[in-house]
Image (tube, rainbow, N blue to C red; front, side, top):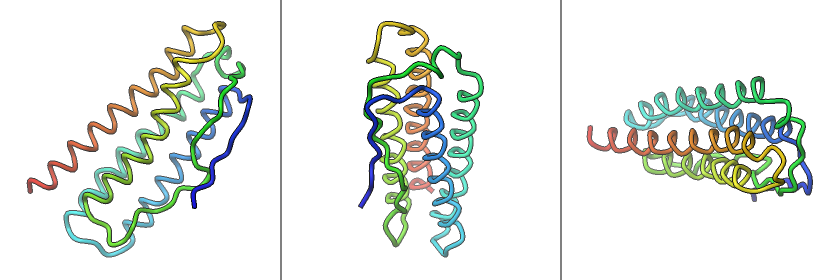
Length: 156
């Protein structure tokens, strides 16, 4: 069962650290999946999405380094709803199950960042929208790319 960590108050720095940790866990699950035997299509899709997930992780880590101090040190009254542990996708792994699993995992982060961009104190509202809204948009774009990749592999 997936465990969620709930906080009443959390600062921007911790939110981004948790997001990076969560994306690292997804990357690790993908690494483990690549070591198992799968169909050729699944292996090709794994290779493709693993690279994209690493890029996404790198983007969040860069945000953590480059985000304005106002955002990093501002507390949000918000319950962060991302799992503390990432459960692997169900076996046997197919292109569809892998895609759905990744969309679900990334969707949790996207929803969290979108809500953080829209809600909270009026102080730093514009900066918050830029940082967290930008991350939400990037995750949404990433999920569209993932859906496109899935379709491409189905059309092979």
